[in-house]
Length: 368
Image 1 (cartoon, rainbow, N blue to C red):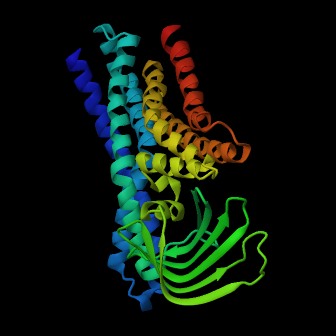
Image 2: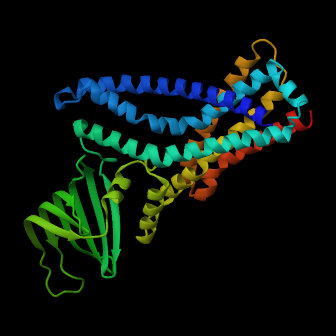
Image 3: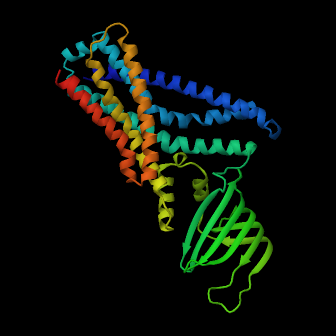
């Protein structure tokens, strides 16, 4: 059995590596063509070809994380179909490789791909993505999201704060910062508008170019509004640089631990965390899709191929992989819009393909 596993694992690993390399080369080319156009637009700011190449190279781990389950499916289908066409799998079956043994062998290999996908998505892709965005922001402008920037919230015993950060520079400084302070009853108490702000080491933001406006308390005798212009101001809070970066960057660019901590911060401050919860569970379930892909590929070893059958099988694998990728994204958007359970939204695509895989395994392998 060790010899059979060594044969199957070697062929599958080689095929998956070849497919992955092909996909990454294609994405690298498309990204580089797009960045060459950016070189022309931001040449005056110092953006050069070497920076474009660095940015595209830093995006490779993100593409690898997204493409690995699809590459596993296509590579495994190719190997299983080639084994069936050359009658090698028939020989393996006569040597004692039953359906359940073949399934266990592929599941063990799929588990290795699961660990690899998780490691890439949690430890390699997030820092590489963040470095790529900071590199681009250094020459093409600061990091921002939407037209108003990122909104954060902090609750305290005496009231709550709503914070708006328009953008973040590559050095970690923030620009166009607004802080709205509300009392315990929800009435506006004061506002701060700062041209820039820096993160301090003592849970405080050091603001520059500050305009402060204080409103009278509810039921106060005076209706006077106090305004002040300050060169600098120190605002104590519990909002860290990681939280601001999480609000400005896309959730898929965060690691599982960062997503979990940010979700707890949002829930503690009575903010909706649906979008981030869905992405958290997608981070949990997405690596497991590699197991689904190897199960889906196993029935191809029991088919009888004629000339050209392998090409059709590989094409079917490509279509199945693309449909899984699209279904995964569609369910993410639908779950966010329809307020579905986050874990169910993230798990449904894998559950659907797992049901298809087991159905094909039962019909083509066990019954035949």
